[in-house]
Length: 159
Length: 237
Image 1 (tube, rainbow over the protein chains, first blue to last red):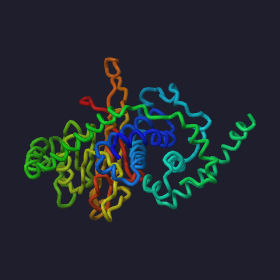
Image 2 (cartoon, rainbow over the protein chains, first blue to last red; image 1 turned 90 degrees about the vertical axis):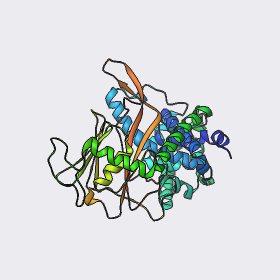
Image 3 (spheres, chains in turn brown, orange; image 1 turned 60 degrees about the vertical axis):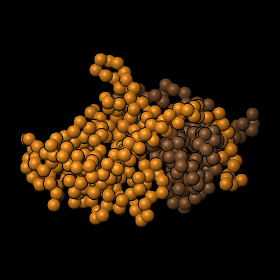
């Protein structure tokens, strides 16, 4: 697969996974674009990765740790939180609130499972954690989401 | 694969993100990728300069900063056992040996990397310095990340965009390797208000610090145990 084809096929899924993980659309676009640029620069190697889309998400999330810390500084310095003045996109706010309420790791694990359909091993490799930890996080996240989503689903069904 | 029993939970989440797509044009991504590649080639070229480059650094560092002789105004003392005290002041960073054996490394920018490597070695710190953000590829066999503990502490002065690392060579585990990696987010801009009131958008720059049990692969990483600190944009960017 060449890079252009990979980009076309993977960009939406990677963005959704990172967006769900970091909770901010603009940040997610920035991080994923940067990760794809790095993938292009090293495509001879990244293209042979067993799950290159997982590589993209891992790179984006790894970058996010730094960006998040820097952004806190930026917010304090400018006295303005960009998140307060910007719409995050088309995702339902209630859904985003549910995802944001999950602990970071649970949110990342569930995002990789839902949007990239990664299995336990690939998720573990992408996040640099043990497969058993992935299973535990996924189980807890799924249980929490099921509990929280039930009223929303009932509402929609009733409507 | 997703278990059918969980799809009652996952499907609504997936559906709610159905309208989310990345708008960045392929050409833009490739343009950024070219910049990454150019930087890598520049580094690779610098590495192949080998002995000539090292000799040049060996000349440049003492002449600029007198690492074997304390800088003017500094207290005379020796560095870690078997190593000279280091006192270097460059535009991007400075390094000072302290009387208690620790070394203070202060970053304003991640530049002059050959000199940084030389200075770290001179201070008795086994380190690799790279201008590339580790992208989490396969690690070097048998090499794992270590907690930095008291061996390396990092602080950020948010009023001056300064990152200060205090390294205690004596506390570094035997055989360990400290890695300092530059981070630049080319498309993440920080709004800086200048003295004249104008706002300028500049790329965000920082340094990632990690300790390994041996020589790490360039892409080796573990985001849970890595210190990442940004000193912000530089005027040269």
